[in-house]
Amino acid sequence: MTGPGTLPWRSVCADLVAAPVAAALSSWAHASDVSVAPIDPGLADTAEFCARYGVALADSANCVVVAGKRGAEIRYAACVVLASTRADVNGVVRRRLDARKASFAPMADAVELSAMEYGGITPIGLPPSWPVFLDRAVLDRAVVVIGSGLRRSKLALPSGALAGLPGAEVVDGLAR
Image (cartoon, rainbow, N blue to C red; front, side, top):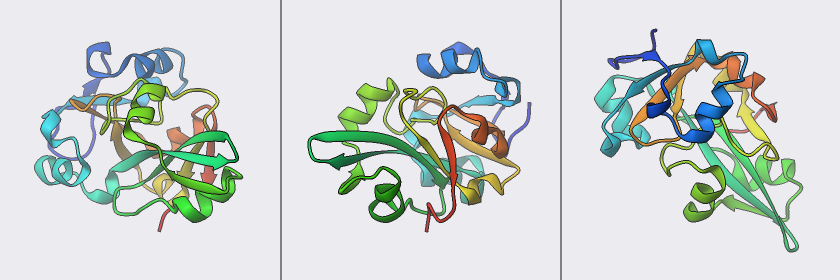
């Protein structure tokens, strides 16, 4: 198994991914293309992770949970953007969710609803009702590093596989 940087990439094992990630990988067509590597959980945040493990920001993708509100209804979505960019939450994401207001979901909500650790949330294994918006630039990378659902590991996979996730939508201009 290979991936970017200096990490010891290997086949995915259940003890290095969150339970919903393991469940999703058990039936996902691209699961065999995914590698995992343990990391220091204190270095899970993107900038520190990339600096320590030699992964370029352009090869690392962040998954952020967004809450869009229209009246009393709250709609959640995941946005996957390269670590060198930011999701356009108040423009593109808000419109895609048909919401009057959109913002990053509160940490407690994101953790509870995803059943993943904050700082490790990944688009693999999210609730099936959530759309997964992928910035087109993510798919331009050969391999991308994403969270594993836990702060103590990362996943590497061919970026194009992300488009095969349930609920995935490739969105031009999602990031800026």
